[in-house]
Image (cartoon, rainbow, N blue to C red; front, side, top):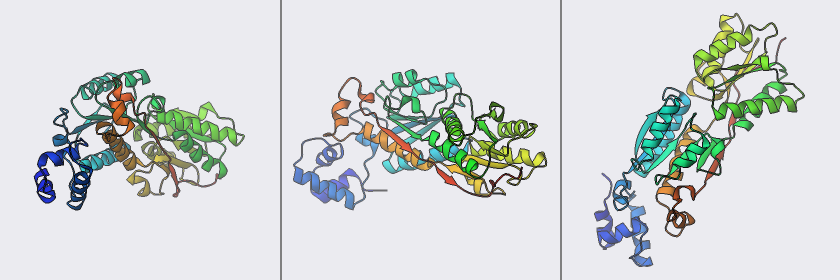
Length: 350
């Protein structure tokens, strides 16, 4: 068990009330005493308990996380980052899955933002920007991940998916591929749409005209990647490379090629997105665009902590006193993806 407020007070020879004032950034102690208490807190590795710290404000010490799917490794890694940072800051995490269902997303979002938790991290397919903006006006602050449409309206974190799509496609074009297939994720996914936009931009910038026959719809699952690849690889003039909007669909592409008697990468090159653990374990290894998923999750918690407990002298704190507190700190953080080259891509042989 770590040190308590009483331990800090005893070491600093002050009252527990004085320690509480410092923890909650309240006036009532001299600057000399404040610095002394802060020094002792650091030396004793004391971390305030959000539940105790928030009693006066009727806080719960809990954060909510809403994701579409707990079975998808992408979301699992985001959850790991959220959980690790929440634990570090002393919060309890409540996880809700929506399966990409619109009504479920609305119900979960409404529940979480009704003062049930201190802050909410949302990853939603179906909620519109106007719905998310309306939710952001509740007293509970929210951070949205992976939705560029709310950037500038609500605190948000995203990967530059358009640049991701350009990088992945350009890598294939520069390898010599001119017929490159693309497999979308679930309909309504902003990240998939942005990756497709980058794919189109890269083709055009290299003098290639996008071919709608080479574009298929998946839903980010292995099964849909497999089915979409079967259709693409059965075309009379099949693609020589396929860019799948995530790794699970890319694995489906690789197995579809095997089932059709094709070899990866000799007959078909494959590139995915996410760099999940299995990407390095399949044979050949999957070339993919690595997203900093753990860092994204941790960053979301850090932003929420700033919104829940802004320093007293910060603009956040001043704005938090206004009626539109949750919209006061419109933080936007953009992460870049990284190309990870393995054995699933090679120059075309036809």
